[in-house]
Image (cartoon, rainbow, N blue to C red; front, side, top):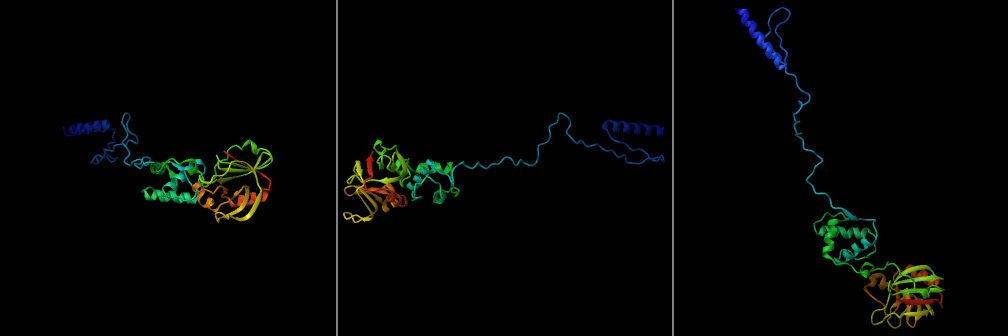
Length: 279
């Protein structure tokens, strides 16, 4: 009766082991029982079908709460009309005093850094969308002669009277002087004219006198590289134009701000060459 009871207990344990998928060790080769019984449960390497995998405990590094950096519009080395407008607006708020030149140089970069730092923006020196928006809100749309305060504007088409012979072709509309020979433009420079009270005369003239180191007897002011074409009016170099651009004006003469260019022009122009001043 005792052995039968033990057999039933062993059979029940064996059924339980098979149902659980376990391994049951009962006895070694000597016939002696080894207790307790060790049950080994196999581990699954992958989740059973139909189960969802547990989410990773480590957050993904691809997502970040930081806002994206604003896009850069212009930076050092860029050039063009947009850079010229940036410089004109920086001049309006007294962060830039030179130019506009249309070239994003070290002075422009320094001015942008100063503007950014004053307003709590990152001092990158690059003009991004945030910096540009702030600057535009503080300034007005610059006019043509604010954009070209120091010259550099494109010349308009030459007057028909300039297309033959040797001509100083001077446009009041584009504020430029073309040195032309037989319809070909040899040189173009920016020029400045007389003020309202002393306007530069318009018409066709000729160079009648050249004076390299001339000084005005009427205004006691230097007129280097002077080429006279109508009474006391001449084409000549102006240090004031070089320093202040179109913020000033002459007493009727045609001012040139590029000393190297007018020195070259003075060497080429002869007495008797035609001068055309037109709109």
